[in-house]
Amino acid sequence: MKTGLIVFVFMAMLIITASCQNDGQIEFNRFYSNGSVVYQAHCQNCHGAKGEGLQGLIPSLTDSIYLKNNKNTLACQLNNGLKGKLTILNKEFEGEMPASKLSPLEIAQVLTYVTNSFGNKLGTINTDQVNADLAKCK
Amino acid sequence: MKNTGYIIAFILLGCGCKFNDSTTKTLPIYGNKEPITKTVNGKQVTDTVYQTIPAFKFVNQYGDTITEKSLNGKIYVADFFFTTCPSICPVMHRNMLPVYNEFKTNPDFRIISHSIDPKYDTVPVLKKYADKMGIAGNTWWLLHGNKDATYSIAKSYLVAVQEKNTQENYTHDGYFILIDKQKRIRGTYQGTDPAEVEKMSADIKTLIAEPDQKAAK
Image (cartoon, rainbow over all chains, first blue to last red; front, side, top):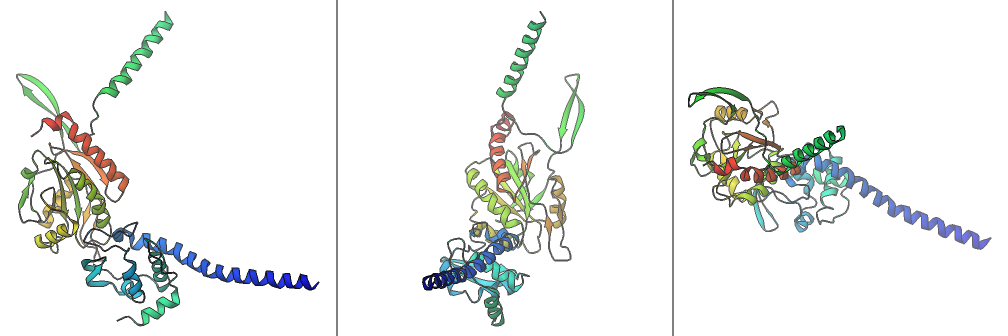
């Protein structure tokens, strides 16, 4: 009887731990797959299906170091657009990215997609994070 | 006796197929066509006249004047774009790049991209765009010109372009139009679709190999 209880508790703990991990994974998957739809609709024309950009005109999205260093301002870049000089993978770009009309949720989704595709791996960027980042936009 | 007839019919059919196979592949000719009757050596001859691209005058990214004469003896691809286009243009020119790279060493091949936003896309702006795209030499011309002239020549290429609408956007088709040395339309391809652009590359090779095109100067 006692052994049965121990086994039961052990099993329960196992299930809870597994489902916790799954919650994070589920959130990531949901953001990532929705983000890919947002990307196709709003970003892919310019940045390309593989995030490759376009020659010297449009920067690629494959600069993992840039994305990591600017993780907290990416939401502002999408929300307000980007103008002026930018160095991506040691290449200088000068142009303008128009402000997107995306909601904070969509921004979170597409950032999760971009920062975990094309060789990038930054994990989930969720809506709370995006809202916090947007509040600090310059 | 009846069977023999069938057999002969089959053989003839077979020959027909074979003949079709062995003839060189040619591309269709698009646009309006009109029959005209003229007198050659005292005989009445009916000929088909195809729609051709009319005379024009634009300026390229180097500031050189480009007219229809600049394209005499050239097979070329035309499209319409503007440098600040946020929608389909980057895709079109991303897809055009492999075509440029494949045929840039062919002296009888050109690409012309008409800007539909001449106010912003001045010659220096077009030059900068070309530099950033990695376009050099005279294979790919970015053309600046009078807006009316650009919009009216678009119609000759069967391409629809429209002025700025309420959302401050220009709208235009993303077609690539293939023109032969006789200035006739030989193909139209959706420039935003990599598969169609690949077909265009294959068609350009077919067109270059056509006896009519080899002979034309």
